[in-house]
Amino acid sequence: MKTQQNIANLREDYRLKTLEVTDVHPDPMQQFQIWFDEAMSSDVPEPNAMVIATANTEGVPSARVVLLKGLSEAGFIFYTNYQSHKASELDANPNAALVFNWLELQRQVRIEGTVEKVSRATSQVYFQSRPKGSQIGAHASPQSRVIADRTILEENVQKLEKQYADTAQLPLPENWGGYIVAPRKIEFWQGRSSRLHDRIVFTKVNENWMINRLAP
Image (tube, rainbow, N blue to C red; front, top):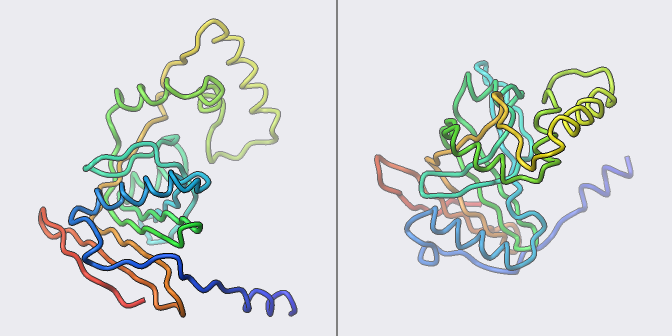
């Protein structure tokens, strides 16, 4: 097929930057912050967008894009409905992989780690800092559930808008909150010419980080 031929011919020769072991911070979370700050200052669209991959107890994977909403030495924080598909998989198998893809910088960061819920107090602070429309949306949507049509969501929103017309902050839903991904492996990928990319990987051994270069 012509379309498949066109796809096969799509390629980009990466020449923007390089990455050496001597270039990276010995703490991968600090190195991530350096790259994240650069993505922010380079006007990368939604630099906090990340793919999160989960798997069920049978090892069947699923992936979707979510937004990073917190970062600390402990890990990467995102928020979701605790009755969503990803949440049900994390309840059964608390391991996940994250991918940040910053094409404008020809960079990628891959993270593997264990996942646990953040405190309800932390979730509440973040939830009530969101725009009111987003708070209402979280209450209105039975995320990942089959619904007959969109009018169900719209009717839920209308009811909630009336119910909370006089307040900017809605209560935190019982089924909504944050997760933190505590990394055990972080790989920094920098595109290079002729597909000879730079890959520096940090692997956690006890409480220390081991640094290695990987072949592309």
